[in-house]
Image 1 (cartoon, rainbow, N blue to C red):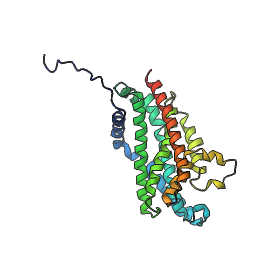
Image 2 (cartoon, rainbow, N blue to C red):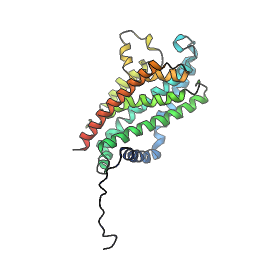
Image 3 (cartoon, rainbow, N blue to C red):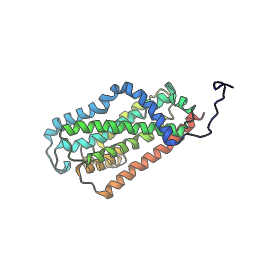
Image 4 (cartoon, rainbow, N blue to C red):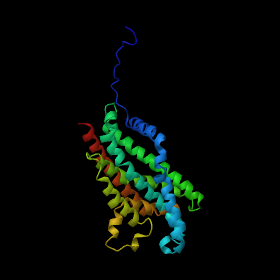
Length: 272
């Protein structure tokens, strides 16, 4: 029998989670390297413009006080914008692209027909989100450093915290997006009534102590507040390990819960 006629037999071995997730990431990277220009404005240019407008514009009217840690407003703002941008990128990457991969392009369905499991597809999606957050954050830090708004190497830890903060928001939203079978009309509400208020009132632009007392608990349960608090302390070299561990534990817990629901929903959707 010729080689051509020899039947191909399965090895009977499933792909490991890491390898399978990397294959999913590779597919997303293949698309992204051809279309990355479409994300430059929202990922890098927009936070830099915020830094210039609010830091060097409005910030010139804000005197260094205890509220800003005795620092110029632009320095106070720089690490917070890193965290805020991570959440905004995570919000986009965990909504329409996920819906598209299920409903419009049906990329997930094609991958699920291979030895890659729904849980591994979910792991690949979230890994891709983490990569996007890290690379975009690094680009922002490079520009912020050139503008002289960074105070030391602690911003590298802030970058890690920003990725964790973005994942704490992305994982639950990915879980929710996996349940959507309409055209995504629900997503604008997430941006308008969750992402935007969280951006404005969770401590990124001013301490939440300036909010009414009844409103502060809403800020306490947002990823941005926890990420901003520990991210700023890391950037300024004033990290207190007790509170920092509490903030990180919250972000890890929310991420873990979101991942659990996301995996469950991916399995339900792709196992039909």
